[in-house]
Length: 370
Length: 245
Image (cartoon, rainbow over all chains, first blue to last red):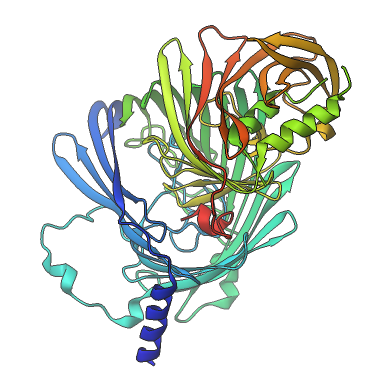
């Protein structure tokens, strides 16, 4: 059996076109910012520099490598490697191996179809980025194209989705410790076009931390506005309580519409929701597990290089919100000046408390990519 | 057949054409015949200038026919971002999030990377004669060469430019000038194409400059650095698999 697999791989490699050796395309991103924020009951200052090095292979159409090193420089220094992977294209499928991301389902902030990384919880911190969820994990994936618009993708995550904190280890010894097979996480998805609608469905088994079966269904299309709708279940692998099925169900929905105002001005609207039917629907002191969250957004670009955004995370159950106003100006090649204001509106028992650490903040900074 | 990216922009802003023995429709057909190729690969740059200086975006694009195109940005700020047009659908790929976005509806008219070009402009459009009523206004000499002077009026609402003027070189069948107007007749944009070279028996302009008439000291210049009109593209290059590679 193993010999047959090896022969198949060798045959595939023999059929693949020969490409020249790859070259490296590099870029550096330096971000310097200062924040005035609420911390431990007082107003404090947080200056920070983040420097990222990206090394991307180019020139080989069948093999691709990517490496990113992030460093955070404040009073101390932190290092992270959020991405380091290679991709190999064979005649019938594509293999990805390393630390990277797969994007399942559809949704900007809330996405019930993202059963791998999970995108149904609320987020905080910097809400100004073009991507608000970009977690990565060590994974292996096989992508099988089925025509121009359809594909199958299988993925396995041996370490599951790691806690983003504490991923850098000074000792190499733990890296060589094997893990039991039953702790592997993995799944399969398929995406297909049905007219103007895209249907995606799949299943993911989480083998670490929370051991769960996670089937999902995701749809997105366009009817006057862009829309998406996803539903998933997170069913415990051991002793599921079916009478509490609604606690396992998550649903997300989103609408998006952009308006071109002419003269390079544009205006866009977005509304997303995350629904947990079995979660709390009445306010509780210090409660975080509520049944409904909303994410409205308005973005306006008055010129080619200037953009303003107003985003909010809304918890309707306890009537608290986290509001985020940002402005950015791409003044020179690669250089962006930005500022954002984060304002929580909620009392001391709410999800978004006005005096919660880090939530109330004003940040100004520069980002340069070269 | 593939349509060179510069002419897509040109015909996106203006379209076609003409008086005399030739009709406006025939001039449009000649322009499209010159611009459409079996398969093509282009390396190019887009320079966006304003009073603070200029920003350069570089890209590689592949096209086959009027409705298949894949464009990948190669400059550091947007490296790896891609645009795919296939069968009247446009998809964007953002490598940071490993995310594919299906562009639909009004989002197609949004600016690409802050330039004067929309996603529709970048990736092609439908039949020009379906969208515009074209009239030949006359003949003019520009830079010593005979041109047909055309007027285009949108047949339907929703087009970015309701009225346009275009000047087409009568020998090369290349539109070298175009102006876009609002419904009220106010000048919105001016476009100029030049550096016309013969590539594989076709006349290909190697730069296009677009100026926004409402803004001072602002323009976007597209330039072809390398072009191959006989590119042997892989059969599955216009697919989600290639988009996410």
